[in-house]
Structure formats: C-alpha cells, structure tokens
Image (cartoon, rainbow, N blue to C red; front, side, top):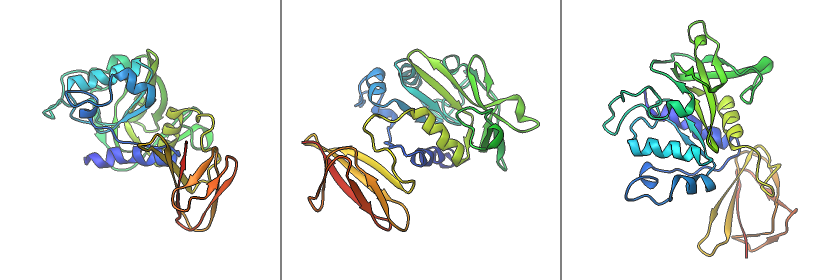
Amino acid sequence: MRTASLALPFYRAAFDAGLQVNLVRPEQVVGADAVFGSASEFAAVRPVLVVAADFTASDAMLDWLGDYARAGGHLVLGPRAAYGDEEARARLDVKPARLATLAGVSYQEFQSLASPVGLVADGGPLAVGAGGAGGAGTHWAEYLRPEGAEVLARYDHPHLEGYAAITTMPVGEGRITVAGTVPDQATAAALMGWAAGSPVAGAWEGVPESVRVTSSSLADGRRAWFLHHWAWGSASVTVPLDVVDAVTGEAVAAGGSIELGDWDVRVVVSGA
C-alpha cells in the first residue's frame, strides 16, 4: 500500500474544509534538531495535528504525540500511524503503539479495501448524508476496538460492522481521534472541520466555496494573506481587517471587498 494514498486524502480534506495547513517533520519536534519547543508550546499554537501513514516512528516521537494531546492538542491519527518502529518493524505493542490506552481504542488486525465500504455516523459530526450516513471508507480498514473511546463512524459491512472506523477520546486538556480508514473526501473534510472547531473571531468568514485564504508571517512582523480563486468566473471576498495589496499598494479597509477573476490570486498584507 503506497503511503501517499493513505496520507494525501487528509491533506486534501483540510483544503476542502477551508483550513490552512503546514507540514511538520518528526525531527522538528523531537531530537537534537527540534525547533518547535515542548509539546505544550506546540499545542498552544497548533491546536490540531494530523499524523497519517507515519509507519516508522521512534519511541520519543510517539511519547511526544501523547504529551501533545495531554497539553490540549487534538491529535488525529490516520491509518498505519504508530505501527512500526524506526527500522520499519512491526511493534509488539497493541496498536496504535504507545498510544492505545490514551486513545481508548486498539487494534491488531487490518485489511486493504478493494472498493469503498460505507460508513454510518449516526447523525454525529461526520454525518454527510441522509439518515446519519457517514460517506465511505477507502483503501484500508483497521479493526478498531473501542475501549472507552466514542465511536464517530462505524463500517456498514457484514464483516467489518463489528469494528469501529473512527473514534475519539478526551485526553488531559486535549483529544485523540483515530481514523482506522481513509474517509472519502466529504467525510474527511467533515472530520477536519470538526477537529478544527469554530473559526477564530475576526477570521476570513463567508469566503466563497471556490476561494481559499492562507497566510504567512513576514520578517517585519506583518502578515501576508494569499487569496486563491480555484474556478472560472468571478468571486468577491470581504476582508475582516485593514489590508494593503502587496502588488498595487491599494488599501482595502475592513469590511471592504476584494474581487477575484478566473483562477485569480491576490496577495495582501495586514499589520503596521
């Protein structure tokens, strides 16, 4: 099973949910080259961390993930995460290794899926269809056995129905959610949106479906905002704060609008 087929759908789901994503490598959070500080410091600025298809992980990395959840982060474990050691050997621990007790769920068996399997979400946050339907699981199915965790989605399948597909469990100040399958894009986007929670006050709200807004901090302390229009036609975006167009120098006051054309992009800057 190719790792990309398990991990990339979660990245796409964050995009579909209108979220901004950055990639973090294991060596950036544990070891001599770590640059993000402690797990609690990381959780304070990055409230959701998705770890999907991270098959080879050190003991230190897995322990750090547990500390991240305890400190208030929402850890989302995807398929094949927390399974192997640094030499890609299957760990002897019940899976997810070193995290099963915290996550309130375990598994030892799994299978690949030749075709999508329906999911049932029972009207919860992952219900994307009528009657509590939860979309479908694809590519992979881990036989999750809840041991205190809440079941967010279960398999609609004569054999797999005895196992959970996606579970969640409060941990300390945070939470661990385990996805034992790769949800279809609608369900995965619902999962990412639910994990991220309510938008921050003053955020770019009411953005058209075809527009994504991301940002980056500049060296001088200001913030650059990137508005991408991923469609034909036009789109109008209301800005929540005073900005200046980085190319033309045009100022747009909070509450004003920015017009985007076919497959357009605008870069604006906020701050003193």
